[in-house]
Length: 498
Image (cartoon, rainbow, N blue to C red):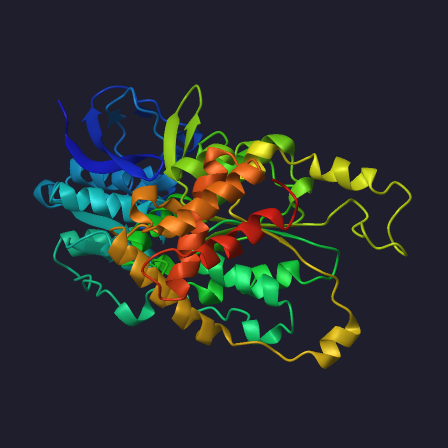
């Protein structure tokens, strides 16, 4: 006989899977058992629940207590099962009404004093609860996150005692209100006006921002590669509501959604080159999202690209094409979105001064060949724009004028984005199909001639035309013209990688 039960969730990637938390209190030797394939954190809920009850003046009955997590064949991970176990127990002990509990799903971690701590996955749980026409009980600090999942009743409580008083009519938990003005994190991003000169790099950055293209910056130390890349977020438009929801679900699943507020701006991730393959792609014991998923609908900046491990870099190839990553483990098979924009920077060789007769090492040019050989041809072929940046001297810094501000360039980027979204049903040029590119006959002949001359792959030819389409959009042209193809070709040939 089941004395009480309440809904909670197990997580597979960013998806929430409904789980019944059942409680049976029966006669027998005193025991507190949790069954249903719990992990270590779920098993430890016994002590947290026991201590929480003690802190508010309650004691578990001296009977046999069995908590069953249904379905039993799904692994249950995480401390968010503390709250539903506690509420189901309170209902079985007739401390709170059973009928009120069944109208809600719950998740939250209990402290020993009965307060509720934030947990990962509240946004996905809210979306699933809305589809099941249930309310959601969660920690007070995550009320805003829960409200973003749909039009549902949210009980956001600071502690367990407040929930007990609310269900018994002794206290009313004020329903939280979605604070529209507080959505997203306002961050100050560097401005393009800080950069002097570097016209080719600035132009490539604008094209990359407008079309969502991948970009590789190659040049000696101090040429401004990292400085340019850091200014890309300031050129990108805000996330659409659909994009914001998807990205926020990923951050919620990773426990990185600050203050429970969904992301409004495209994320910018810049992992260190010592990052492992699971950290970059995703994985680990719980198949957590990696940097490429945390950069979904945003920017992934890889500085010192050849210094990353070969396995980690090669693992980028499939997500760059498909926009998702599937993590297959013995205990889990999880798919995360990974529609990221790759921006990479590298030196021409290990010493960094290849081509500078006064500073290059004695191994030149062999050192440059060996260094670039760390990057496979298939990976380089997936990068749309290649820019070889020139050394920037102190004299250049003193004499050259600052360029346009990010806000000015962002206007052109937004206009180009609107053109491509209207033409391609919300798809960026980086993912456009050839039939949607509106290519003139003369431009097509030039693109084919260039591709044959430099032996572009079919992928390289397609990416050449996609970049040309973005250049045409920035110029406000309906059709791709030969001049647009010619400029696009310079960005595939400049680094000598094709």
